[in-house]
Length: 311
Length: 315
Image (tube, rainbow over all chains, first blue to last red; front, top):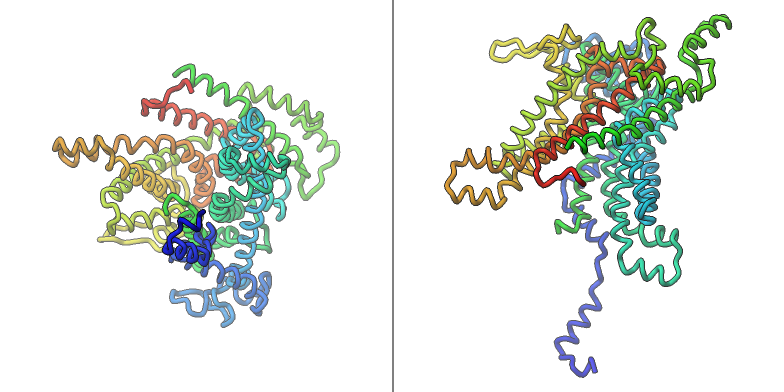
């Protein structure tokens, strides 16, 4: 009876509709992101920094901890200002106070910063999503107790807890990753909980429950995949926040320890010598600032791309 | 309103207790004590020191003792700065930190609101975009990068403008001389200026499109009255709720700023204590900061409710 009432025009439309491939939310978001020039440029720059940070230290003739007492605090060969000495040709960005190659050290710092950013964010992601989804899904009194705890933790600038942890555990490298991640999960938990509360009311959850899926199954298979959008946006904003925290601690001398290095350590060293060797401050600071900018632009771009309100 | 404030203050007690307990036990978990040094002390001297600081008692007794003394406002002696109690050290650093923080928040409010309003009035014009890009820089680039670089420009290289010597001291407190305050206050305020400018711009644009502003325009009020009275006042409301987080960030920022410029504030004591493992001092400062931030958050909430008649205390 459908076919009987259908005009030729309508059946043609139906045919064409069958040939159109649907665009998923992700394809849509990806296209919108690619249209955002700042975000695309940031992705390219970040990828370049990450690639160089991974590859270059192997290619460079200088090890990150190779000391050269003949080239102490030497400016790069192309440095325009007056300096005590110019570094040899291989030292693109000069040498530090005990003659180590600054470029290689900056790249090692990049490795540490990016690794901290990724690992600690992953830790915060796991804790935050699990906690938020559990609180939101269980609801009621459990929810309010769990969220009250988050409020309490919020009222303290978390950095003090990390500082205490670093004081107590002797600036342990791996602990730093976990400690920062373990305090960055609060906002993530709030976001996920809010989303979960609204998703919980949807019909497909009811359908899942009716067909006999257990609580854990619902949370893992039906709730978590649906909160990914806002979570991804927040992840890209957490990574620079984590990098910042690590550098903050390292700057104060409470993070990464010599001979390993990070951008915070390099900037602290540079600050101590900026009167005689300003390049030791300028270059690490520039690398760090550029990286943070890139993450922020990507985060903004993703938010615009994933937020259906602005469509 | 008094009842609300009291209830909030009471509510802060368990929060503080959690913080004290967590910090206390984390500190005691530490391998190696504050009196470990390169040279081993004779055992009897070590025992004497430990009993003087009550470190030889069981941990729950130490905890109870600490809580009891804390209830009287006594944060105990500093382990590393002999002859000083933690309270004395905090008292010594407090005026510096307060002066720094207050100047920074004042500067941030004045400049932030001013720039935000200018940007809102010139929405989507070149000056708006320029200001907002600058704000992005202020938010993204951390204090410990801005501080040294400004010091490099104004302190080390010095700047001469129209015959004026704008060279500023690189560091030191110098009894709080204005010249010594300029750079630290600017560095501390910069991220807040940026955030406040963005916040005010957003709410100002919203207020400028509100119905009552259109009515004011229709009445033929002069633009300056419309902006200052009808748009700016509601636009400043969100600022009150930002004050709480702003203060927490100022506290964290002061750690860095006091370190960079060598100012004798609480933040500097805290960092030195953390590096030297001066447990009581670290613990004392954390508790002090936590109480301070909780109190200021409460004040910010009360201010918000006082300004916005839609908010009631009976929530």
